[in-house]
Image (cartoon, rainbow, N blue to C red; front, top):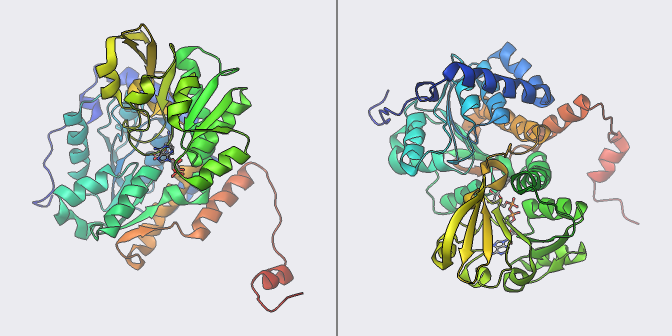
Amino acid sequence: MTESAPESEYPPISEQLDDIDAARTEGRRKMDWAAQHMPILEHVGEEFEADQPFEGERIGMAMHVEAKTAILVETLADGGAEVAVTGCNPLSTHDDVSAALDTHENITSYAKREVDDEEYYAAIEAVIGHEPTITVDDGMDLVAAIHEDYPELIDSIVGGCEETTTGVHRLRAMAEDGALEYPVFAVNDTPMKRLFDNVHGTGESSLASIAMTTNLSWAGKDVVVAGYGYCGKGVAKKAAGQNANVIVTEVEPRRALEAHMEGYDVMPMAEAAEVGDVFLTTTGNRDVIVREHFERMNDGVLLANAGHFDIEIDLEALDDLAADRYEARDGVEAYELDDGRRLNVIAEGRLVNLAAPVSLGHPVEVMDQSFGVQAACVRELVENGDEYEPGVHDVPDDLDREIAEIKLTADGVEFDSLSETQREYMGSWQHGT
Ligand code: NAI
């Protein structure tokens, strides 16, 4: 260990749970189910096991540690890497899965559910204590901690990968300030991730989590979707598919117009607040639903967030307004106002598809795609890391296509390819009318 690496005493999950054997068995069972539906990781995993491309690499990861992520972690470890992993959200870890991972000889897992801020960052430091040569983040907490507190480690870091929109935004802001000192792939931004994970994954799993948590129907409800980006589009489409009336709020005129042309009602949040039954934020921004909105809402509304951080719904303001507060159901906190109206917050305003007690995150097939891209990017860093300057990089298009082709083959879908004449035509400027 170099002098700069933190000497953490934060223990791996195996030293934190009481019935560790039962947890491992259940975690393994969840992972085996996920693995059966992840043909892309199975394919790249076979290659990695044979070639051992990550021999000698130490991979530090801060991700939502549940069954699908665990298959990615295991795939990298089976490819020869030493992997240290922790959570990227205090409520999204499945302890049993974390325990199952921690049994692998190449993996140390510090991820634990319901940690406080101090434990959360202690676990991040514990991962950094392994002196990673590659980082894989969901939200950029590892990159930030390394740059702020352990810059001495940067020289030995080949590069990193970032999973989500908010992490990529933060990285780009860091790069613009000239503060990002190693290359990071914007995995979020590549088609094989964003068009499926953000749209279908967030859409399906957020609605499923809210329905399971509340036991309430979508049909006939007025559902307010804040933000019509990739995630918002998925949520809006799936809610409409379940016969809800969808209302969109936006700050970007073209996206507001897009939502309008899709047939959704578009209006400011101040108006939507008066008519919505369910509010779901997907902006990646802060203070999207605030006091003036709470004041206009109807009794019994549901409030949930699918954006990365728990700052889209101003819960402090809601708490100030509330005369009483109680747990209405598992994962539902009712805030009762002076006049008796109850505003129900799901999963503490954290990522609803991962942080509610019943949440399972995105469907397995979707995460197979995102993590297939992650695995290909880690391999790219090991093979060609020297070619990338510090900064944020797009995922090379051929890697993204490779993952799409593996998936299509696995699903038995055939598709056309360009003829030579077509390729030449598409690449030329001479052919006019
Ligand atoms: P995006 O950038 O495509 O969309 C965000 C949209 O919100 C934009 O159209 C923007 O104009 C709009 N917006 C910003 N401030 C607003 C405001 N005050 N009111 C209304 N609209 C506003 O981003 P994307 O990919 O949809 O991601 C959104 C968030 O979801 C990010 O935090 C991302 O990290 C997170 N995410 C969550 C996932 C999950 O599993 N729940 C999966 C993928 C991303």
